[in-house]
Length: 441
Image (cartoon, rainbow, N blue to C red; front, side, top):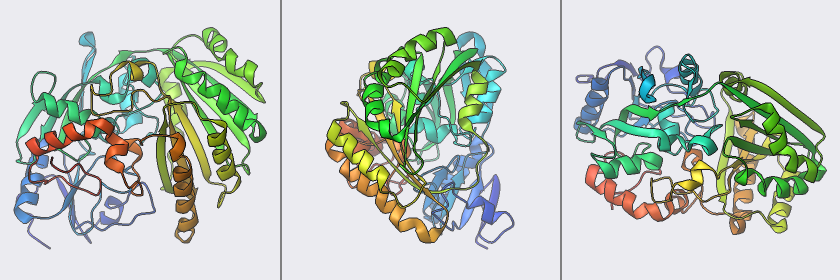
């Protein structure tokens, strides 16, 4: 065993008890073998891990929830700085603020905030860490009402490449504060605390519509003309299955009454009458639990993304249909998440998250069981992504994809040059680096 001098927290070396579980990634497509994993339990553990990595010159990665689609939070024969046990929560309810540890998984965080009838606009997957979600942008059920998760950050506490602790907000380290809201995932330092704006919430209304696969083109035409422009309180999703699965569905959450939601959804129902239509009132936390689903086992998948800045043409929809008719298995789907509302009202240059003007994000997804089945599924996602390039722009950082050749521009667009300058200022040695990290400018 190598020297652990200087490492603090819960330290697990390769081969030690608990190592196999500690090295797992949410995406079972990857199997990496770090030399050592440090679970940081206080901020000083993060400082010590960075200083240890500098001295030892070991490659390292930062991990929160372990949900990186491409396992960028793991590294072979190096150090993993795991912040998943930094889970403090301090509420200042009268000010509408919460100081939150970066390791909080989303659903447990929502459960804690719900005790005070508060919500953070974040994602839907129960086990995603709040740090990883926020630092790449952060989209979810309340995004059209309250903005991306990163839009709700007031301040970051960060340990830098020099092992120093700093606070970044609108008054100090302003460039870093700007950069971390959309590109802060492992590029500039380790976030050890967030201060978020949180929002009062109680009951919400939910809808679910379904159609036969044969109506897919009509449904998309109707949905894309409606969902990005709907009342800000309504965030809508559309899921396109394989022809084999056959049920197109749309659902969404409305921060208002069920009666009002029924009226808002009428344009879609009238344009393409659904096979089924369900509406119900529930508490916010019931909605969060419903979208989170049951705890899932480790999945094997390939995902990618693109943005629709204009309505998809009939030619684009023909491509989608053709690919959904010719899948390598039943585990393929395409999901649309509506933007607009508060997301669009912030200028693209206001934060590092650049895709403000998009109508919706498109999420290409493929899932399978056996490792031997990987190749055709990965190829299906890449063929579809490329086929849709004439009709789409960019990609979503939180849905990272190693096969996007122009990923810096796809993720960050015109904000890339400024991001490189911030990187040069705070990490000129490029200590924080991984397969898709921002190089110094």
